[in-house]
Image 1 (cartoon, rainbow, N blue to C red):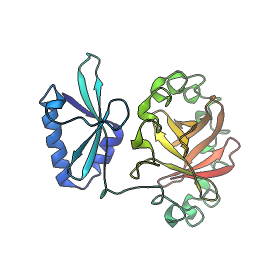
Image 2: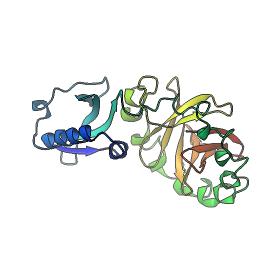
Image 3: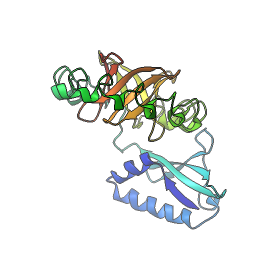
Length: 262
């Protein structure tokens, strides 16, 4: 059985420092590659959603799905792994109230009122009203009303109501209320209170959820390392711009600074 991995899994695995786990995972992959019946190697244990399974490997839990390729052959898709000892990034660890480096009130480099390069009112390159390339009313490629590939109402793969893998109501691995090792981004208001979290669907769209797991809006990446934001009716409501470090600042469609993303 062929073994593939999601982009997120590959990036997480490549940065892992546990050589023992890396070796054992590679050995496990070799054993899967050598069989056509995964049940002969491990007992499949479901995590409660369609085709998602968990396998314990030392102190780690390995999450994967069984998919079909274009020739109807089964393959294993590695999705995620977690452990009690592995760099947990819960919301507390990414809270700007606890970490001055990601607090724009403490770090001027990530504060658009202090750093003109990340302020769309000062830098036309990241101002959708000045740069047509990042304006969905001017650039059809980033307009879901013009491009079905980035329209969740037209593309089931990026629609959490159609794809359980990207729905935190169905997939506990992307539910920060259940999984303390959730690796995604969190959205904070201007008082630095957490209000939402972000789920990556693929390379074209991100989905936003509140902590009641309600899908609130989505974002489409633009050419300046940011995102154009839309409500669920595809109305343009704002944008995310890089804070020059590892996060984003959120602006409404009038370029008012309304939040941060970490």
